Structures are given as C-alpha cells and as structure tokens.
Image (cartoon, rainbow, N blue to C red; front, side):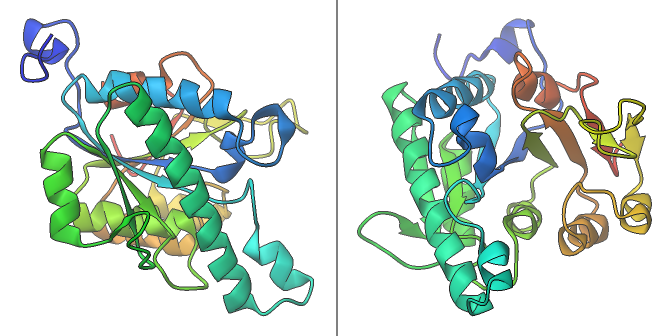
Length: 251
C-alpha cells in the first residue's frame, strides 16, 4: 500500500489528529532492567509508531533521558544544576539515536533534531525545517530538551507542540494508564480521571507534567492524553480518538 493511499482513505480507520507530539519518558525505555536502553522495548515502541505513520499522521517525538541520567537527583547530591541538566540533555540524544536506528530499520524515515548543536550526528533544531520534515512524512525526534538547563523534557514537549502547531500531546507512561487522585501502585482505592481541566491539574498538584509544561499547554490550548504505552495498540488508539487513559484540557 502506498503512503498516499493510506488506511484512512479506504475507510478502515479515521485518525482524529493530523499532527501529534509523542512524549516518551526515558524510564520507559529501560524496560525491566530499570537502567539503560532495552532495545526490545525500543523496537516494540517503534512498531507502534510505524502503525501511526502509516495512517498518514505527522508524528514528532520528544524523549527523556531518565533511564541514563537524572539531573535533579545529581543536583540534590551537590552537583551544579546547570551541569547536571546538560548531562541529562546528552542522555536524551543517546535515546533519540536508538529510536532513529530502530525506526529506520523497519522502513520509517526519521530525523533527529537537537537543541544543542552537534552536526556530526543530528540536525540543529530549526522550526520551519522540522515542520517540513513532518509534512514529508518523516518521524521527527526532538533531542536535548530545550537546550537550556532548568527546563524538563515535559516542557520541551509542550514548547515544541506549540511551535510546530501540533493538535495534541500524547504522554506515554509505563505502568500507569492515566491520571489518578493518588498513586495507584500504593493505594488500590485511587480513582482514575477520564478527563481533567488544566487548572485542576495545577491546583491538585497532579503528576501529569511539571507546572511549567501544563501552563504552556493551557495557554496554547494543547490537549494532553496520558496513557500506558504497554497497552496493546495504545498510540494508534489515542490518535484515532478512542477513549484511552486521561485527557487533560480536551473534550
């Protein structure tokens, strides 16, 4: 099947969104090991991404680096915060290159763009070039966060989504299938929300994104879908508008 005559055109599936940002935590890539990059996990997520691309959806990815380095933890132990954050940005580049390799091995054109310039391995982030990659059907991975210390990769996802005019942010979690009023792993009575307004997330201090990222999404009216990446076909189901996880700021 040619890319132009997508599944969407023959009526099997109709995506709800045209351009999306997928936010992946670094921890999700570690699998059961808890540290480093589990290539079997990367390959599984890559296949899910390929399903979505074949629907004609323009997909950008922001990946964290917590499976390799956590700047906030190092800072709490006495390291200079800016230095610790820059090390975290380098960790996101390692993860991004792993994804690029995995996606290209299954035939998906992919570009890595970094906010910190390193031309030997990736393109510098330029907004208009990023949008052109997406229009051409290439998965575009935004690495090294915003390029500035003190800003999380959650904030990067919100910022890049606003810049490239994405319709939604998909927050892929591992082991948690939405937003709860308490930690479901320690409280079996914790209640999952189907939907939430941005302001309630901020007021309750719910662990969806950090407050800077949530505020940026609220200001730019970008909905966030929080779901479990381990669920079968979860990315495809989210972009096709199925009820999955928790939607923040949407309908």
